[in-house]
Length: 258
Image 1 (cartoon, helix red, strand yellow):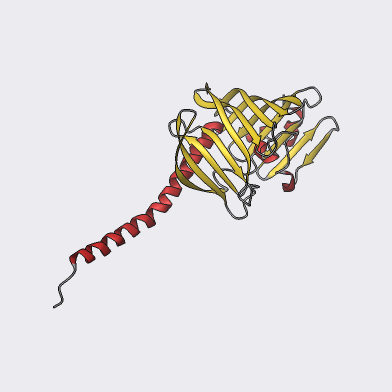
Image 2 (cartoon, rainbow, N blue to C red):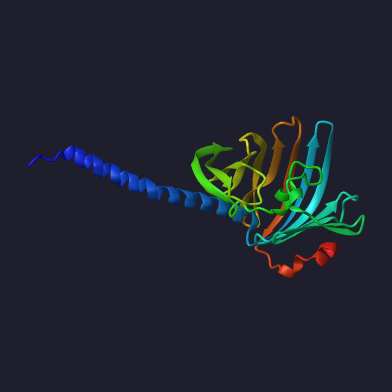
C-alpha cells in the first residue's frame, strides 16, 4: 500500500474548510453592511419624523437661504413645506409611494413630477429632487458591501460600498458611505456616476443631540467639478417617532399645511 502524504491531506482539508468559510462569509458581510446602513437610515428618520431646517445655496457670486419644514412616515410618505423666503413660501412637495407631487401656490397648480425629473436640481441647489423626497431607498435599492474601516472627524467608521440594484430608481452608479461605529451617523458619502467618476461629496458635521438622538445637524453637498459651489442644510429641530397619520400626506393637505 502506498503511504498517505499526511501533510498533503491536511493541506487539502484546510483549503476545503477555508473555501467553505469564505463562501458563507460573503453573504454574512453583505448582511452586516446592509444592517449598518439600515441603522444609519433609521437614525435620521425614525418610524416617523418632523423637522425644521434651513438650506443655504452657496455660489461664487451669491448666496440664497430657504427655510422649510418636513414630515415623514416610513419610506413611503414625506411632505416638505417651504416657509421662506416670501416668494417661495407655501410651495410644497409630497411623496406617496412612488408618486411625487409639487404644489405651487403662486400659479395655483399641483404638478405630478415624472421620474425624469428626480435627478434634476431641487430649487437650484446641489441636492436633487430625489435627495429631498427620497424616491429611492438607500436600504432597499442598493446592494451593500463592507469595504473596511476608516476614521473621520475622530470617529471610527465603517466604509461601505453601495451598488444600485437593477431597475432601481437610482441615478448613481455607486455610492461610498462612511458611517460611525458607535452612533451609526453618516459622516460622509461619495456619489459616483456610471463611469466611476466622483460627482458629488456629502459631509455630515456639527454632531448634537436632537430628541434624544446623537446626529449630524449640518449636511454639506459639494459638486466636485464646480469650484465654489455647495449647498448646506442645517437641522434646527428634529422630532422622531411622532404620532402622524397617513391621511396627513394627501394632495389636499399639501395645499393647507402650515
